Image (tube, rainbow, N blue to C red; front, side):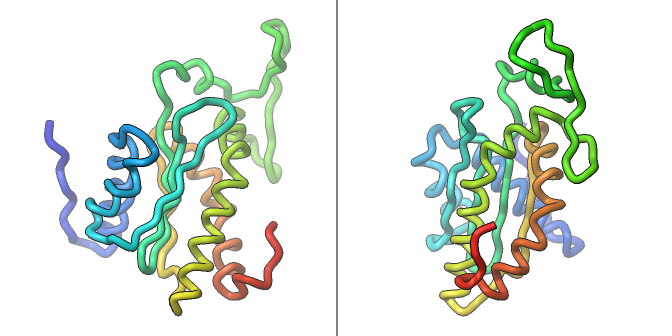
Length: 183
């Protein structure tokens, strides 16, 4: 079945089409070196930059931070078939099979353990890539007009976890990108 391109109707459709394009290209890029050129061609933007995000839990790319002239996209990919068991890790568990699962909380909210662990393994690289994207925009005399946080399947869970914490960071970095210490 061919990929169907969304047409510009309401204003939000362009953001949805943009996010879907990033996730689609990331899912079909064979390796890290082919992703940025594929995204540059897809979006017809030779100045576009992309940073691949990996975790210590698994080898494949888990996400990408993409920066265009005035927007930043954080896109988190779905799981691979060999990760199906981890996708069920709603509660955390010790390393032994007999360890009792326990709930994990973040900011007072119950969170999915595997999604949280993947985010924590990508957090530093994601925030550094986000800060660099904002710095490069400010150096060009612009600021992010939109920051899209998206994901597919497992990446959707990660993106929800990430998205609720990102707006404050983006605002503080665009106001004072070089004077704010890294958080």
